[in-house]
Length: 536
Image 1 (cartoon, rainbow, N blue to C red):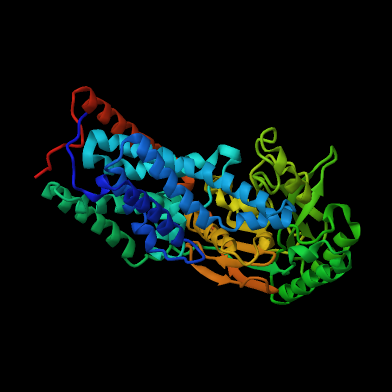
Image 2 (image 1 turned 135 degrees about the vertical axis):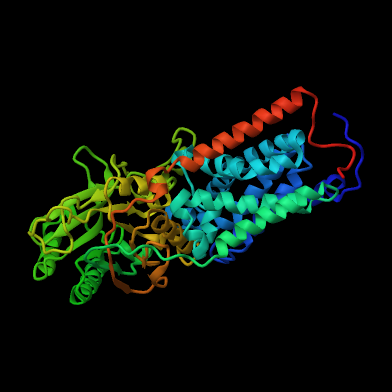
């Protein structure tokens, strides 16, 4: 195909087009914490999509890669410091690991760029209608697999504080939010593309306006859940990573958690969460710690969740959460399934052997095997030893640290019967970076997707309590001892997303396949989406 010369700046100046792609990545990164400028999520992809309307597939891949690199460099700027500081690998190797991860993640944006440029060359502006589906599938959904998956920073998470968007999460999860954000950007590009038919402009503006109206409408209240409330508490012991391994501080750290637990019990808490790896001492191997905690819980019959490393009989360790009560001590154990890449395991160890010292500094962890559903036969509102009556059990979904970013895993917990969600984490690794707020934002989406209360205990913050509509009821600061206390009502209703977590992904597959088939047909019959003559 021969294209007539154009005076359009996008076509004449490749540097400006590359700059627009980089700008798109910068805008997208600022929609997330720490800047947390959620409105930028609506317009962040406009520069990239405008560039892709003028690109060949190879150039589209390059611009997609550039957008992704800039996006992840800002979003994940905390990773080199974590790897260097806590892995003991040095800043140079820390940046090497961080840049490797950035390039791997950005490659999915390159795939989106190539696909979108290819479609536009054959379909013209019609290709923009497939952009939301292509983005959700290629730039986000596919990231669930390489290196064990790293679905951090999906575009929809930027809307964690927007009630109108959160209410839609129960229909399609965070991916539906991403779909709408990209759809708005795509329609904006179609509406303001110069020299195009008037109906494109009118249609784009109308559909973009409808999306905004849908989001800005006042959020309708959730139907109240019937049932007795459960008093919960989350302990934030504020144990810095550099003091956790000091032998002289172990007693003080444990006393700090015990004191906060007494305050929680005095406030009437029936379930108390300690953070991930709350103490250096392994509770499963410490009868004295079990006795001390059991004696503390005994007068009220309350229960506690304690995060602790657990040594397996066959060797190795698991990152575990123990359900503790005053009668049987360690009632249940959940072993973390999704281990943190480069933190608890080394993906592709034959290739990335040089990163193994980082994991050796943390521990040789083994993954668990089952989704975290705890307390199946317990009514946590009743004292230990009192059995749950018919329909009165309050099982809950348990996620440790990084697992809360997997929406499908949490949805599975709810399908299995979870009446609320609990998550424990140790975000001390992140320091005073944007990572703790980014992590907390993803937990907010899990509550909104499943319409379940969520209680979160984080070692150094952010701990909190999130309502089923995604509203943050309580949230703590960073690096301060704190206690979160409140009540939640266990729920048994299932959202559309929980019942059909892959429905939107399946719809996106069909949309993209339809667009590819239409593009192939038009190409076979000599039609192209880009013309040397402007449309009228």
